[in-house]
Figure 1 (tube, protein in one colour):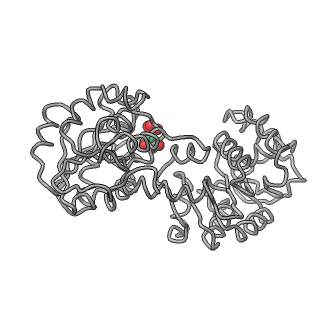
Figure 2 (cartoon, rainbow, N blue to C red):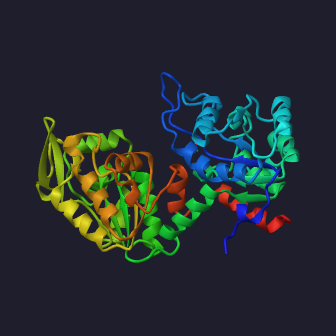
Figure 3 (cartoon, rainbow, N blue to C red):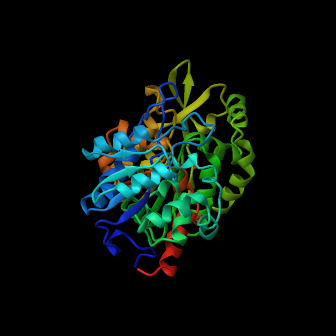
Length: 410
Ligand code: 3PG
């Protein structure tokens, strides 16, 4: 049984339903326009569509960027995109909880949708706090009395204990939206009781995240293997004592990654068989790819990709897995000369019969570029929240939903 309530537990016709979604999208720095509608579409085609079809008066709360950042914008365009996706009128009001917002909520009819202004225009929004503390804020005090139900659909922001993420669960009947439900179910398949063998494929440059995830999944017997590519694998090789050459070591130091080497060293000593590293790499020799075995390092050139032998090793482990989690590309995949590792490893994941879970901006971009998205078990809409979930952390947005069940009458 789910630890939280869902939309199946409520009758929403003609009820005011406050829905927290994550519309936070990439914004073009010059035009300030929304670059990708992936998140808006996900919420639109599931939770929001269902609520509108069931005749709810849907009020949407969402954020875009943070005050002071270049991607902090109003939600007018997001509302217009939502209307286009749903092919129905979507109202927008440039106010979150003031008189304008309240009047617009009171005027709503069953089946209508209203998007409120960027919830981070409320100054206290991004403070972390408990549901009880946040329920006393102006945002919750003004909006909650107008609403019958709070739906949290923003899994991608569930690692934030912000006002709109947890405050309403202390005062309103609350449940998970369909995206929240789908994310939690899919992620649990990869983290709670994954089918074995379970392989985690860690790439990209966020070595600190990969280290924490690897520690958690190996020490809890979740993953049988962690295969490491991308910049992260260079750091793992260096921690193992491989001399990569001055250029690569300077690059890793500049990225402030070398500080994680002691932690990686400890992990490698504890799990020497389970952590699988490259045996060969592709160098950038004047723009051309040149593969060399790791035993032939150091090099004066940059390491931009995995070598073919490594790709074959990774693909073999992947083909025998029953569950796979992938986060991060295997090399500089944006450059055709160096996309071999990412393409081949991702193709192996897509071709495997395992349940696969993918997340992270670059990972999703690469999966889409290679036309593999329909062959991946689940593609998460989350970035930071997914990483924290895979590290075994409790997400405040999810905890608040679980506690709401215990304290609310339905
Ligand atoms: C995200 O995109 O990771 C979430 O929307 C959270 O945004 P934040 O990092 O600005 O809190």
